[in-house]
Image (spheres, rainbow, N blue to C red):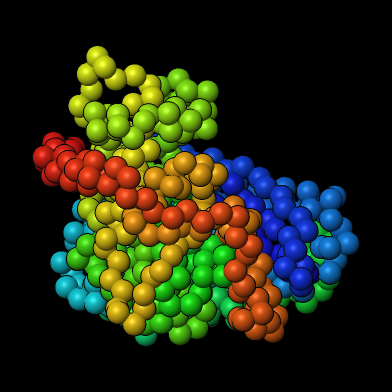
Length: 488
């Protein structure tokens, strides 16, 4: 039996996985984000620990026998968050999260200080990454910076609390801008540019390796056996790929979560920082992945559902689906950049725009515009991926909360012109991937552990309305260029 812990932005999820691939138990605890100033996004790590205690109590009540059989724990989580601890292991300030945009000036400074940044780290300097956050702390909170003994990513802070060990793994470390992604090791040059050294960094392992052991007192409190291993784990998207069995070159997924992600596995380091594409290590040895990220995907749909008084997101999607193919050409256009944007624009100041409204437009047309705008943003990210000819992408999985809408999935397949597959259990991706990495750390083989789930549905691209989609996508891209200078 294996336990996967997935520390997301909005919830912490725990999942129990049996040796026959059955998910035998799931528990969740909600999390909240604090935004004390514009562009800021923070969470108190003590909230993460409270959520972990809550899910472990829930599993202890519902599945005590399964917990008692757990052999290893895997960790997954939100990437990039800066969790700062002192020599005594105490947290110095709230963690600065992946969707925090305060460090734009520090990104520019880092890029000037290290002209080879993209070559080493495989990515541009963006406010979401960890290194610019530390530059911001050094400049604006120097007393706190002077006391930093270790910088941990969110899931790795949980590992520290679970084991007393400061350890990270390649996929999450690749999102800090301190990792030499091709070499899979910390870069002294990048660390020095932010006033840090290797002493401030956790030890590195592969995601499928043993990183530590669970503290005996926690095992006793939660009903786990002694000697439970803790796997390296993975950042959330790499963990989702492992959970879906997407670990071979050319396999990938589109994720419709709070943020939107296009992810593809590779067998080599293939950076394309010029277009804000991310090139990261995968959670398995000798594997990497490419990824484009937009900061507002399903969250833009949630915003629109609330703002335009739909009952919920499902009601908005139903209204959008009611707009006939022949009527879509006259719908407004929507730029979905409610939290700034990463791929392909790398613009933390980008904003949402609803353009082209007339008296003829009602809630359904606005709903369609919002969903289409998110889909166009994902397509722009998809176009930043650079795959060699020997690594073809024949289809992609569709995951995340937005994947519950088959209509939206079909729209994406039509816009991407790539078949999309809906797999059973895709909503458990990160936690399932963490549990699978625990299984691998306990001696499992990749071919045995990282299998594809059962197929629920395949969405084949349609050419109906292709001319309208191309025209609207061209207008969508032109709109961003036309208003870009107005963003503050």
